[in-house]
Image (cartoon, rainbow, N blue to C red; front, top):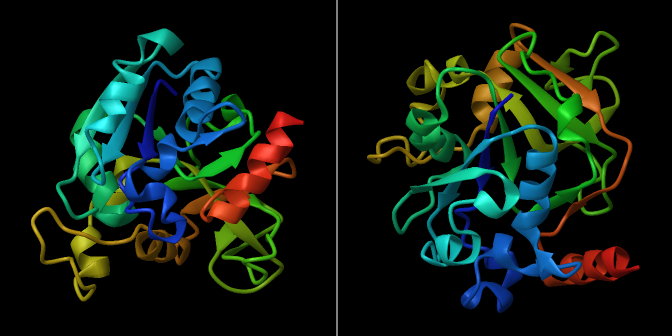
Length: 234
């Protein structure tokens, strides 16, 4: 895989006051911005081209990251306007910049030690999700991972979606049919979450996954960010 998308458009409401003047993915942790950990791992996995979704304090991203050349990457920015488009709308908005091949997508507010090169370059179905053990703040998980790597919305022992996945553009091909009743779907560009599309694809066993048993943190609150910083600084 040569292309990747990083979701970095959120308002960071749970991270206030830290995000009043700094976008969440640019908050420092372990000595560098959170998003830089992703850029380094993507570059190490052979990714050459990264699209970053932006909205809140969008102007700070090119100032901090430039064109990506310091990591051997080419960075493009997909501005969503003053209102973030959520994960589904954000991915749809970025598709014209991502080409036709499958791509990695990463939430900008998580930290994970997963090796991106181990993700499948070609998902068996429409998407491949990296799942992790349920953290204390999310004990019931999101999805069930079957023995054959099929991800289901119900049944079995549930795991948490890490915010890291590999996607085919076809996942969004019929997005209107799935989320037409969702508030924000009528916006231009539309605003909607990716989860309904994934759940719809799961009904036809078109979503696969794998269980990452290494380190992962949803750095979505000041407390969890501080804990992660302490861990990374050793």
